[in-house]
Length: 206
Image (cartoon, rainbow, N blue to C red):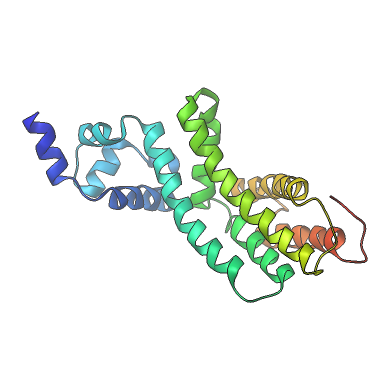
């Protein structure tokens, strides 16, 4: 018990550990993120890290949740500013799509998705909460655009589901570096889709 108490007292703040994990992913790739390596970065033993996070799966999920909380704050600022809904939809897409090949946030997302096949119910619920936050914000933005007459009437929930599926597929291509599907091309595809399906005179897609 005394050793555990000393570990808690001497441990760096949780956010520092998670930020260090994300930095390691960005600089060295996910395969280089080990408990021992992360421990060296933050001055803890791998045993102490396991004491706090219990497993690498939990470390990765908490790191993703931390990264998503920062993205969520940025998303909130972008989507609530005074601007046309269509402009804010573009901002949503910009934030959603990876910055490029090896984007650390998307690298982490893909790994968590891959590990989710064997995840317990708690981990799955937490992953669903992350997805749900993006979905709810998009549905709310679409509903606002419809109510203001800025975009054509669609079913916001159904449209958001389809748009996010499109963005997920295109984003994976960017994140893994598939040739011919860089960030600029993907943003162009997404904006063309929005123009075609939400313009007041365009074909419906709800």
